[in-house]
Image (cartoon, rainbow, N blue to C red; front, side, top):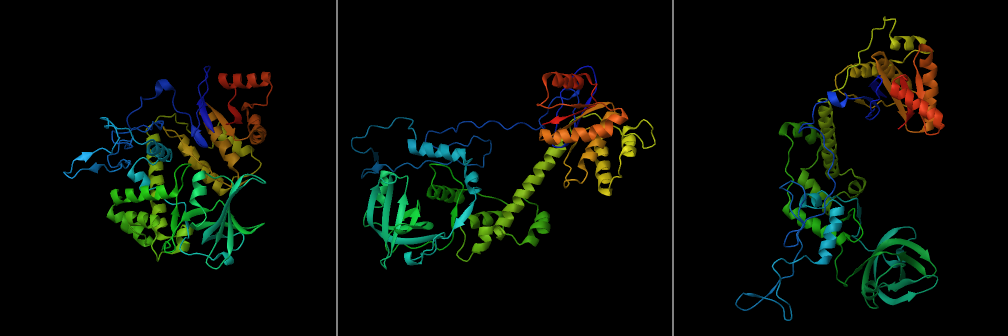
Length: 468
């Protein structure tokens, strides 16, 4: 519901979330100050330094750059650096390797432009790679990890082009790996005789058990298994999990997450939760310990996850409080509510004409909204209730208070069907009391729509109902 002063000149109507008062006209507003909210600046292309490093575009000095690693130079016996044979002398400003530059751009798309961004890029799930399942024990429909030696590798063309790799484990059981999209490097990687450790979804196939597009790693017979859960991070095309893990590990060795909560607050709210310090929680999530509770890590109930949830909730509440305080600095017209015994009060007449009495909850929230409307700053309030709990009548009372104070009101719904239902109900309540209600929707004919817009612009329509 939005309220605006009735006059011969049309004024723009602006809405907040659900119930909002229109701010003062532009001529009556103060100029924006440094404390006002500003829109988010568009992302700028990532800048690079001479050494190929991706510079942080933000103002924070704590954020460090993600640097490209250069190959070491050859040195002579005297310790002087010399260029490889046949290589040209390097220019004053060397450009970063194209592959590294492309990877840095892809990291920037994920918002990973500094060490702190990487440290706070937390896993979305974990995979258990701590054990191997013999091929004979694989079950269709399950996720499993197994290991074997390639004894057949061929590219089939029927029914479509695909790479078929066949593994045999130490007991002689066989598994088919099927790749519908593959590169030549993968064909070489999985050559006959290579020992592969694969992980993926198992399913039954024409040639027995198979995995389609599993994760593949070339290993030796004595390659050890991970001792803890393996984190899986949100990523994008061209950024592998291995690359992300290495970048995050490097960032963890450089970045710091100091405790910023006052000791009294931490003692009151954090200590009862039994959660670890912030940096310890982040390290735990990136590198779960061998004795970590795997179930708690998987379902998000681990104390480390609880600490992260506490930080996120605290940051959200502080952001909302800051936005709330900023709105209080803006000006909006007050809309006083007339007394119940005033015979000219539209609110009192509406309450009297309703075929039902308000519930205690409706009276309470209606009073809170009425008080907000009298304040000299914008209102932003969300009214929550089940279907049929009486939210519409509360909005009607708020609109009546705005009309009583000499303003227009607008009620908007997300769909035209819902907006039409509101229009019928509010017309039945308010038009008998002398309130002019206009219905504005995209399905109206041109003449009807023009008449509704004109009524709203001239102020003859005291309540306008439509869609967002």
